Amino acid sequence: MTLGDLGDLQPVAQPSTAELIADQLRSAIVRGAIEPGAQLGEADLATRFAVSRGPLREAMQRLVSEGLLYSIRNRGIFVTELTFDDVVDIYNNRRVIEGGALDLVLDGRREQTWQDLGTAIDAMRVAADRGDAGGVSDGDQMFHEILVAGASSPRLIRSARTLLVETRMCLGALHTTYPDLHVQVDEHVALREAIRTAEPDVVRKLLGEHLHDTVDRLRDQGLGGQE
Amino acid sequence: MTLGDLGDLQPVAQPSTAELIADQLRSAIVRGAIEPGAQLGEADLATRFAVSRGPLREAMQRLVSEGLLYSIRNRGIFVTELTFDDVVDIYNNRRVIEGGALDLVLDGRREQTWQDLGTAIDAMRVAADRGDAGGVSDGDQMFHEILVAGASSPRLIRSARTLLVETRMCLGALHTTYPDLHVQVDEHVALREAIRTAEPDVVRKLLGEHLHDTVDRLRDQGLGGQE
DNA sequence: CATCGTATTATTGTCAACAATCCTCGTATG
DNA sequence: CATACGAGGATTGTTGACAATAATACGATG
Image 1: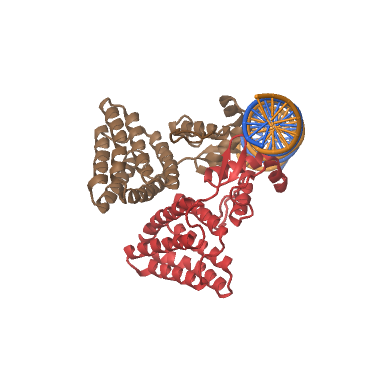
Image 2 (image 1 turned 90 degrees about the vertical axis):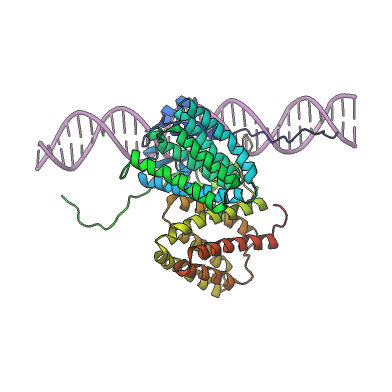
């Protein structure tokens, strides 16, 4: 008995409980539901997730190795609080990672990536039109995620993911950094067009400035000296 | 009661048990003591580490999030096996990460980093003189770790660590890739000198080629098509 | 003989109880 | 009054036992 054409079906991935809890926790932290510096009481959280402390602890260990949490022995696990130095480091890393991804994209997948980025642009525009700052921020993240995905490098994608999570962490602290939402959209539109047509050096520079601008805005608006 | 000058003492870090076990496991995997694809039996490992299954599972979750292990629900946790595509991806990422670190180093810490790299060079030379391939490999890793440390970016350092671990994983599979150990040393010496004196573009290019060479050697020697 | 169904066994997933550590608050003492 | 000491409570660290799932081997059936 031979099988017919079933399309490209992929193996079902049954995520472990630890992974599920880790995802929940991560989004809770990003959303700001748990504020930086706060301790994650095991008993409390365990009942909240309706699981025992065992799986919860496993999940927390994952986030520790991602750098979202830190643990002090016999005291507990806490949400990492980002200093301004961290913000700088995060954006430095984003420049490195996304810049590296960009190089790979420009080396043969420009058109495809340009097309994929359309989804994010559309989402941003719609959100901006109705003044939905959160939606624009979502679109922003989507844009950069798609950009990195264009490099089709599993490791770059993972690095970018954690960096984007950290980005949202500091953004969450001071809600929307752009004066006008449409400015944010336009910046990404320009970047997208450059990816299709401009010289590599130019695109690269544009991305660098785009990320540099954000860190400047963050410095001006919120955390001046140090956290 | 005021305290006198105690030097720059830093907070004592009592690592959690999970972290300790994770370190042990990581080195065991890198060393090749556990071969890729192998399942990590919990009961067996737990007795081996003289702990219960709880802490062990926590440690394994860390390595899962690092990508060294992967877990299949209700089946177990396994050591990830690197395909040739992974090798390419690892070296692409190393180019990105170490290249990014290099940019930061060249931007104001050239002399200092050049000096720091001396340690690694010395270690490599000594090892090469007595034909100790493993020692040279250690020095190689140290070199790249110091290089990235020069950028003093916690996140770049962590990314680089993970990548170096993965590098050693595939290297471990086919023991020493250099025809002559001294060639390997000389390549690093050239790179180090360039970091002190050469134009940024040149240094960057040199590093890129250095990493590219390695992947070529790996393709020639061991894994041709896939896996 | 190949295939399907089933019992067995081993391994993972989960939990609740116990031990160890730390924080807090009250008390004693100089 | 400030400090040191100690009891109590709460939280984390660890363990062993139990439940659930999947791999294996064996026998039944077409």
